[in-house]
Structures are given as C-alpha cells and as structure tokens.
Length: 571
Image (cartoon, rainbow, N blue to C red):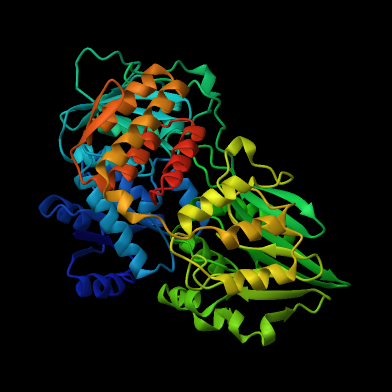
C-alpha cells in the first residue's frame, strides 16, 4: 500500500515513517499543498492521511480531479461525527492519539474492500469511499443506494458524476447513514434524473452546502423492481438512550433494528452522603458511543467524574470506545482481568490505568459507600478473561456474554425478562465446546435475584432455572453432521420451504438468486452444492441476512441448525 501524508506542521512523519517502514508499506510526505498535488499527480497513492484541520485541502483536490481515499486524524468525537455526515465511515477516521495496529488494520481492510468493490460493497463501507474509488477508475456506471426506507440512483459517466434520481437533500440523508445497501446498475444515457451536475466540482460543492433537511416522506422513492420493498414491520434505528431502572442504576441501550443482539451498557452511581462513585459496566461500539457519552454526561456532568469502567469482556468493536473513553476521562481506570488487561496494553493502554480483579482480596471491592462488589472469574465463559460482577446489597449480577440472549428489537424491554429459549439458543451457539461447572456453581451459591447481561433483555425472574439449564446444557455439536451432504441439503431445503411461507415472493426470489451461487435449487429443493458442504450453513445465513429477511426467520433458521446439531458462527 502507498500512503501520502500531508504534514504541514512536520510533526507526524516520524511516527508514520516508523510504522510503515517496519511493515514494508511505502510512505510519501508533503509539507505543503503544492508538493502534495505534485505527488498525487506523479505517484497516485492508495491513501491520503491528513489532519482534520486540513479537511478543506481534501475537498479542494477532489474538485480539481485528484481522487484518493482519505484517512483523517481527528481529535474528538464531534470531528468524527462531522465527517460521517459526508459519507465517510470508521475506516476513514483515526482519533488521536491512535493505535498503530488500528491504523494498519483499517487501511488493509479498506484497501482489500475497494479492490473487490464490484464483488461486494459492505453496508458500513462509507459512500464517499465508493464514489472516490469509482471516480479514480474513470468508470461509467449506475449505483442504486438504499438506506432506512430511502432510495436514490447515482450515475457516473467516464469518471464524472452525471446526476441523481433524487434531490440533493435526499441524497445527503442516505449517504450519512451507517448502513447503506449498494447495487451497481448498467450505465444508461436514458436514466431519469432529477439533479444534474456540470462537473465533479459541482457535485462536491453540493455536498458541502448546508441544506434544510426535510422529512424523508417528502421525497419520492426510486426503487428498481429488483430491490423489493419491505412489507414486514420495521423498527427504525435509534440512538443509544438512557433509562433509569433502579436507584442509581441507569441502562444505556442501543436498539439494532436489523440484528438479534441488543446492546446494554450500565451506569451505576453509588452514593453515601457527599460521596459519589459513578461506574460504567460494559461499553457500546465506537460508532454509537459518542451519543452514549452525551447521555452519561447528562447524569454525571463531565466524563471526568467517572471513576472506572468495569470491562468483563473485550469485544473487537468496542476497542476504540475504550481508548477514547480513557482519553476523555484522564482519571478513569479500567477494572478487568489479567488476560483482558494484556490485550488492552497491547492496544497502548498504560498499565497504571488498569486495576486487576485478581488484586482484590477475596474478589471483593469495597466502594466506601457501604456497597460491595464481588468479582467472580468465569474463564472461558466464553473468553479466557471473562468474569461477572455481583452487587451484594441488591443481589444483582452483571455479566457480558454469559446469560445474554438473542432478542428481536420489538421485544426488547427493560421491564421484560429474557425468554429462556432465546438464552439457551445464544449459549448453545456461542459457548460451543466450553464448560465451566465450577464458575456456574459459584454464581448459583450467590443466589442472584436479577441478572443484567450485555446483550438482550434482563433476567428478572426464573434466575435459578436459567442457571440450571445452562449448567446442564450440552456443550458440543456432532461435527460429523457438517460433512453429511444429504443431511445439510435436506435441512436447508426444509428451512427454505418454511421461509417461503413467511416472506413476500419478491424477497424469496432474491434469496434463491443469492443461493444459486453456491447450490443448485429447483422447485425450492436444494439438490447439489458447488462449494464445500461445511460452508453451506454459514453461506445460507449470510444469504438470508443479505436479503434482509424478517429477524424471526433468522431465529427459526438458527433453531433448526441447533436442533440438527449443526454449529454456525455467523450471528
């Protein structure tokens, strides 16, 4: 990969030089605008790295016809959110100070995705990356964009944006979504467009204009027949919200309208007299944490007032949130286990910002407010460093993946107990091959009255039954079933039969079209596989998810796989 660093202050090039020299990638450095443009013309790079304060220069070179994918170095969430309004994604954003590994991973993932752009466009790629890449190829094509009920066709001719089938306001609403469906269309001169551009400079100037955003209903949808409309009930995406669920206890949840995993983060404020100890349990992914931060500050004031983050599992999508939380709250420390602490230090978290649960006598932490937290290590449930936290006064157990469940967005409720069959389904798929009877026995002896996990509804009743069921559940699958082609093809055919009865005909045909890449389907019966049969269950779920089938259909599919003892790891 080739990188061009625009470094007017001459402070960044030693850092990037060391990073890229070690990894064998090429770095070019420009200290002024003229040198940058000369290099862009002479040796076109794969990426342009520049500070947020130099964003104007990026728009300037786009208007002049230098098409290069940017990586912006930003200083806070507000700057990151401003970039997302223009269709950039997390791939384009590094928050200072940054982790070199994060920089390399994002660059490599973005490079690989753009190389195979016509094969697959991830919904979270960022539409500006798509446009810049296509313009750099001097291509002619149509693109159908679809996000949150809005659609728009964009046509490019010989490396220039010709026009849109929707209004500029409509287009901007679509590209700032973090979940855009993209479909390439054949270029045609006869496309019906409502907005035209003289040249690319005109297109990018439109993006930079401040406009009054109207309600989505004010614009007509342009939907190709090949992209069927949803007919099932949809739950619109919502920003993380805070709910008071008890004395000093707040739930910050993120409702995922297209997924089965509803995320929970907890803020607890322990008080005695003038003493206040605010703690966070779990975090939310980076792209949702900025809104969650605003909710937290409504309760505790500045983030600096937070004492600690209790981190029971380290999820890849949460790493950036943790690093930024530590940056924004310099007095906050992370309470976690030794294995998780080692991973955090690998990301650059100083050892002094970490407190190990192994260091607490008998696993107990006295908060000085009369409240005591008990830390119970649950290694390999499901991660090596996993643990749970028991609040002795209220007999509430806080956990991460352990005791979590799949949950339809319309069924999510702070006051509704998780369905036990959904808990067991989640554990059967996510804890396969894992057994830790000792840790479960320790939790059972504590006799918790409520369990608040990281995913899904809380367990407000029947706690003993849930622990007992998890304790007794089968922890392995019959892996021989994954190689039984007759079994798998028959199972997928029967699931397909059930799916057909639950979704519109157009969507069913979309699924058949997707499956035809992997299997032979005739009359709803799958008779032959073109790929390794062991990969079919994952590919089947991927096809259903790509077609955006109702989530109840995904649940049905997972249940059928578990009943037949076929493991899947997609969800």
